[in-house]
Length: 154
Image: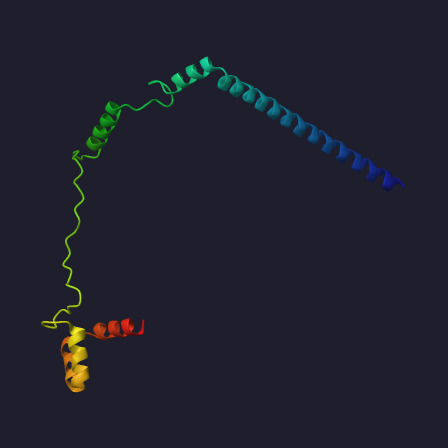
């Protein structure tokens, strides 16, 4: 019986401690809510009062404000300072120039002489398969036959 009373007393002490902790958390939450309500009222007043809003925006973007408006002279001065800091000299950007590439004429195989490689090879296959094989080994590349096979099958 004594042990049960001691356990019950211990449980009551723990419950009182938990209630105290919860009360402290509730007080902190109430303070946060009060501060949020004050902030909300201040923002509401700022956004609904045109004179107050105009004054706030003017101060915000003023030269000595936290977000000063950048003028063209300021941008130029910043670029010159940056170039001097890094030892670079400012120069106007050059226009983009498209690279000039040598593009072969369509249907002409490099190194095959004159004419179209596939048409010559096709004519030789129709008339003389041995000459076509020699032509293929002389002028054809491994990719030539492979690409033709892919085109034929596709």
